[in-house]
Image 1 (cartoon, helix red, strand yellow):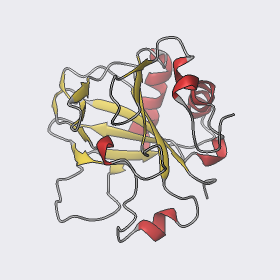
Image 2 (cartoon, rainbow, N blue to C red; image 1 turned 90 degrees about the vertical axis):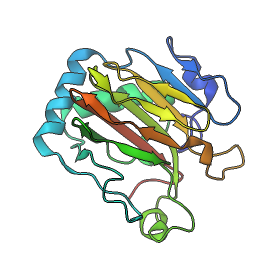
Image 3 (cartoon, one colour; image 1 turned 120 degrees about the vertical axis):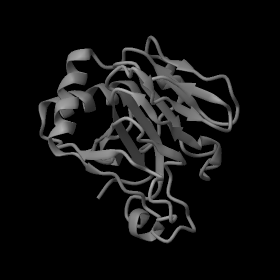
Image 4 (tube, rainbow, N blue to C red; image 1 turned 180 degrees about the horizontal axis):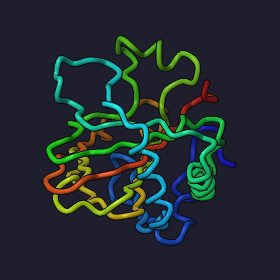
Length: 210
């Protein structure tokens, strides 16, 4: 395992198919076909079973800032356990530092406007969400299906966009080398124009979760 809560470019790039985006502004990677289609389908079914409206930590007055639906996935589900094993194999992060796996579903017109995944140190809910486990370190996001139109993820600062493809992993470090939150990770879950989008997100923390 790497340092608890962390992985490295060397660890990720050791996996065949992993590519690093050429920028010095953030650590950002993708890996097509990270999850097999059959496992993606099982995870989609779990999301559909228990989805609810998504929320954000610090309300900003925009009721349409995040319009997707969310599902917290049961760690005892075999599909979730398979996913966790594959994530550990690629990132080596101590599983104790991981938040529970979350799934998201985006219908036509739904989006998640430009945001960062870390909690703002001066935000109103920072103590509530970070007093035990600390802030988020890495994000691992996986598209579970192809989308007919729209639904990409755009990193605005570096003008890099990823299009949904079944099983594709996109992951990034939410922090700068000195440990401060990295605002260059600002990203936009763009509107779905046709079809549905299903995504899995796994976040890791500075300290053990819970």
